[in-house]
Length: 140
Length: 81
Image 1: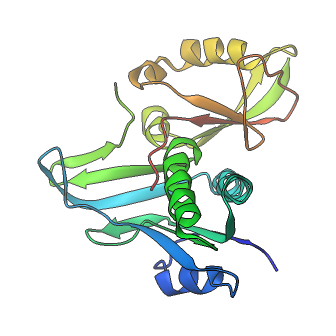
Image 2: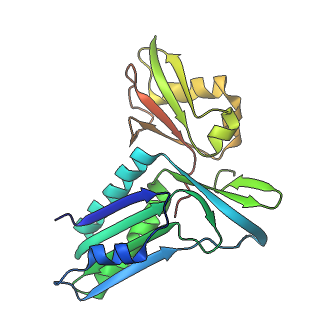
């Protein structure tokens, strides 16, 4: 049985699926991080977000994060799912769930996974405003 | 000379107007020499903060040696999550 679930999809992400994947009889807790599309950036109204990926490499990098999390924290299972394509306000671009015998490991694994994902996984978002689109983080 | 494949993502797709290109580079090219070549050929790349490079889907360092037919991805600052 695999201890990791990695996915990039243009379908709607499913929190229940991520939860179900990590459930384990040995575990005393499950932690979940759910990213959501916010309606403004620096006071400017965001209309939608477009996520593009270098999919084969992004999958590999997400798998590395999951594998490192399993080594580094005492967790049983971890799921990392990311969306691609156009998302609207309130939609879910990312879900991470981790299960562990004790809660601290589950919290820490989720935090580690989302922090690392934001640094290393080749996924880009373009914010669309009423007056055009901007690639996030691209400019000095 | 040898042929390599370039892939562009995020803002670099917009800056170059394409998401992939085949180019020729010297047979002893490294990431470092490729960066110089890229900036000469595509000065638009100066408009971004910084970028990383992946060779065949793995992050590379400046010293990484390139081989014929390598797939080189230009990775502008990522913004997933």
